[in-house]
Image 1 (cartoon, rainbow, N blue to C red):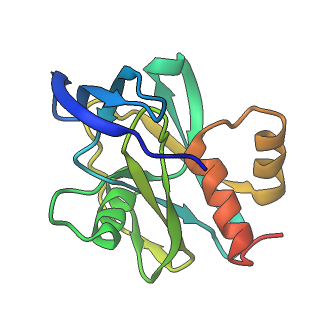
Image 2 (tube, rainbow, N blue to C red):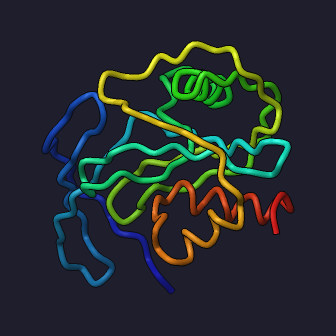
Length: 181
């Protein structure tokens, strides 16, 4: 049986508006003491898989500095403190694409990387939307977006061209919900 670790001490390592890094001292199940670095997130993420009447998925392209590449992703962002994740997703979709979401269906949530972070993300499905919103991108958001056939998206995940965890999780949740084959 796997036993939990005993947290002995937590110290601040770094903190900014996006994340908080802590240096955690823990006692392992075998009695040894171990220092662990944890990325703490004060805000959850939210993302939405938007599917049009033709069965295509909306994908954004954006440059991501940590991986040094322009990647495919679905619309999303951080849930403001006290904000309902559904409201956050409506706001993010409008800000990034100009699309106004109608009904959203909750698909589920996942941890971003539980080996290093306590961050998690809520996933939604949107088939009910309309044009007409005004984009309000953050200063560092240079985004384009388009509609992609789901078979193309699945093939790009399979061949490693799309590796974004949110896109991969969205496909899995859409499959589990019976939304895609």
